[in-house]
Amino acid sequence: MSTDRVSVHGGWASRWVFILAATGSAVGLGSIWKFPYMVGVYGGGAFVLVFLACIALIGLPVMLAETLIGRRARQSPANALKVLALEAGHSARWSWGAFAGMITALLILSFYSVVGGWSLDYIIDMGRGDFQGVTADQVGAYFSAVTADPWRLTLWHTLFMLLSALVIAKGVVAGLERSLRVMMPLLFVMLLVLLGYSMTTGHFMQGLHFMFDFSLERLLDGLLPAMGHAFFSLSVGVGSIMIYGAYMPKHSSLAGTVVGVALLDTFVSLVAGMALFPIVFAAGLNPSEGPGLMFISLPFAFGNVAFGQLMGVVFFILVAIAAWSSAISLLEPMVAYLVERTKIRRGWVTFWLAFSCWFVGLGTVFSFNIWQQAKFFVNEGGVFHLYQWGAAGGLDFFGVIDFFTSRIMLPLGGLCFVVFAGWVMGREAVRDELSLRSPLLFALALFLMRYVAPVGILVVFAAQLWK
Ligand code: TRP
Image (tube, rainbow, N blue to C red):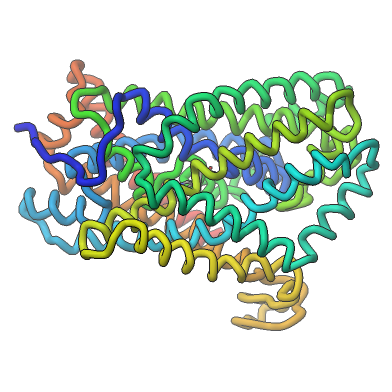
């Protein structure tokens, strides 16, 4: 039994456009900004290893589940789960899981836009030549000065949000293809150039050792963060990839496509890390610097090589575009849902949602300056405070949103989607949608979605609680 549903939001012209859009969603700040700094914070090789395992065993099955749910239902995530659940004789309440995912996406977008704004800011700074011949200390001070200014951050955050909303308001399908066809390959090339430069720093091997050597004791430390980041990096757990799957042509291979996208995304993360850490070591920077890592190490490198000014501008433009194509996929699920459910026009829905995300994002803006001292979930020698001004530990506003989304909501969302595809939709519907020729591959895909991924997610949660 095949379905003849069509999406009311349009559809990709071909499988290639889906690959472009899905890669555009997956590859973004997660790979270039967040992955390296997390590797730094969680101790290098151990984190990378767990991350790769989570991509293969958990992220990939979730991605497959999302695309196949999306393509079968051809609607926004919440409606997709509802329709398919009813069709299979289950409760429509499954859609609540997807609804929570769509909210999570908006929360992620709130801080994503702030960091996307940093890359816009750095395009101008690079072009002005602010980093020509700087020392590592000066770049560090530069980053601190940028983030200390709430007005400056708000300006770029606003601009980034507007740019994302613009495409969404017009409809993803129309806006995305043209911009990504050239830019994505260019980003790959630019990263490889950067990697080439890193090889000349004299610290390349040190960088590789940092990224790929690990000690077994450290494996547990970064378990939950690595799993959370595997979800974040692949854009799964909230319905981003599901809504893109909903726009996918009917007869194209899902499994192959999904594996391709995941490989590209992982490749970009690894190359970004391998390019960044040698620069970090050459500049004498601290790998566990945190969110500023990329914005300090790369300008330092660009500031000190021939043609660095030009390359730096091009690089930050590409980063901004990669971030922008990811941001779009965070907004689209809820926009599609409200367009389906209400009579409000797409433009207005987009405007209000983007405005709400922008508003919440101000909390992240202030986390780097006027609210730097506002700490939540403080553990002070065994005494727990929900909130304390000026505490040494704890999480700032950005930290709370990041923790709640990446470590809790993404894995739970992923769990909901794989269990749904594996157990609720029904074997025949899944078989029909995957249309894998080999029965063995189908059995493998089903096994991954039914057992490996759900058990993996639960084991990581359990390990975190008992640690
Ligand atoms: N994957 C993107 C990145 O790495 C961010 C992103 C887009 C995302 N859509 C998502 C993260 C959905 C989690 C869920 O930059």
